[in-house]
Amino acid sequence: MHLIMSPVEDGLVSGPGLSVAQTVFTYVVIPVSLFAVIALVSWIVSAPRKDAEESSLTSIK
Image 1 (cartoon, rainbow, N blue to C red):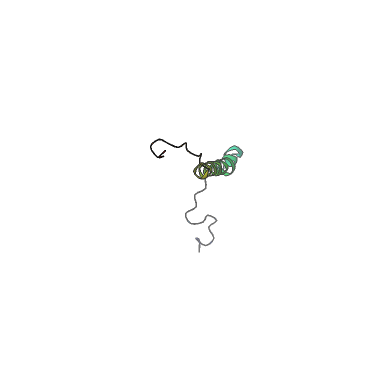
Image 2: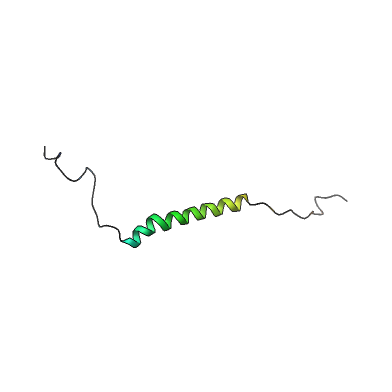
């Protein structure tokens, strides 16, 4: 009966809270930077390629 009335859930270990700066960094800065990196990589991979100059090795005159 004592376990049912316990205010702490099983496996829950409370620790110190996060400061405002840590919270903003964790929940705003990190996700936005990950989004920017993924968007940049996908843009670079799918960017239109420049038309290559004709090479003397691949063209016959």
